Length: 338
Ligand SMILES: NC(=O)c1ccc[n+]([C@@H]2O[C@H](COP(=O)([O-])OP(=O)(O)OC[C@H]3O[C@@H](n4cnc5c(N)ncnc54)[C@H](OP(=O)(O)O)[C@@H]3O)[C@@H](O)[C@H]2O)c1
Image (tube, rainbow, N blue to C red; front, side, top):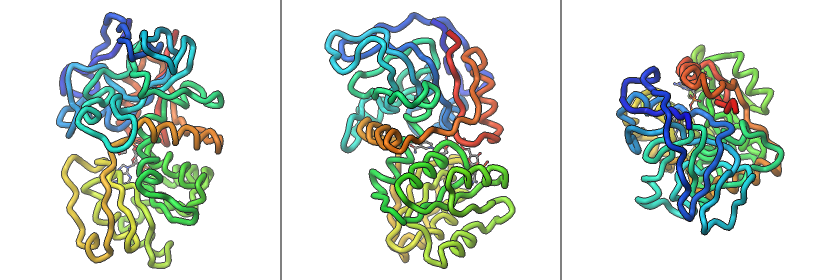
C-alpha cells in the first residue's frame, strides 16, 4: 500500500512517501480502507521532533482517520465488513482514567497512524460513523473534537448558561464553540482575523474579540462578562496566553490546559490560580467512551464539523503546509483518491 512516513525530525518536507505491506489485523483488530483523515497541530509538531510525549520514529503519521472495514480479526464481534468507522486517538484507552498502556497508544505518535491507504484499529477502541456524517467530516472527530468534549463536558461538566472562552479559530476551538452552543452555553471566541470572527458568529458565537487589535484581550473578555469571568477556558495557546487566560476565569472556574500554539515552554502558573481558587485541568485528548458520547451528541444535534479545505492523498504534504500558514478555520482534511 501507499503510505507516508515520518523518519526524521527535519520538518514537513522530510515526510517520505513509501510503499509498505498492507497490515494484517490481529484477532481483536480491524483493517480499515482509509477514505479520509484530518490534520491536527500536533501532527505538524511531530515532524519537527521534541514533542513532549509519544514521539516515536519512523512512524506513519496522523491520528484521525475514517474509512471502511475491509477485514476483521477472529474475535471481533462489534464490526462487520463494510462498516464505516473512526478510531479513538488512544488505541488502548476505552473508558475511565488513562493508564500507562493507554498513554503509549497514541495513533501517529507512538503507534502507526492513518496517513496510508489502509490502517489497523483495535475494535474496542473504534466507533461507528453515524449516517449523517461524510467520511471527511467523521475524520475530524478523534483528536480535536474529543479534546473539546473532554474539557467541556467530561471534566468541565458544562451547564446551560455557563460561559466558555475559546482561543483562536483552529480545530479544537471551533469544535469547542459548536459543542458549547449545542449544550446551551454562552461563548466568547478570539481570533487574529475579523473575517474568521464573522464566520464564528455565523456558527453561533455570542461574543468575539480580535486578539491582534486587542493585545489585552483578557480585559475585553472581562468587560463582556461584566467583570465576572468565564466558567471554562479551552487554553490552547500555552505559555504565551496562559496568564491572560487565567485572568479571564471566574472564581472556582476551570482552565482546561490543552495546547502549546505559542511554543513548547511550560506556562507560568498565575497567582490568580490561588486567589480565584481556579481548577487547572490537564487534558490529553480522551477515551473511546468520550468519543462515543461526543458522536452521539453531535448526531442528536446534527452538528457538522467545519471543514476548511480538503486535499487529495497524493498532496498530503500540501495539507501540512496549509496548516502551517494558520489561515484555516476549523479542520483540514486529506481524502483518498481510490
Ligand atoms: N492536549 C490535547 O489533547 C490536545 C488535543 C488537540 C490539540 N492540542 C493542542 O491544542 C492546540 C490547538 O490545536 P489545533 O489542532 O486546534 O490547532 P490549529 O487548528 O492549528 O489552530 C490554529 C489556530 O490557532 C490560533 N492561534 C494561534 N496562536 C494563537 C494565540 N497566540 N492566541 C490565540 N489563538 C491562537 C489561530 O487562530 P486565528 O487564525 O483565528 O487567530 C490559528 O489559526 C495545539 O497546540 C495542539 O497541539 C492538544
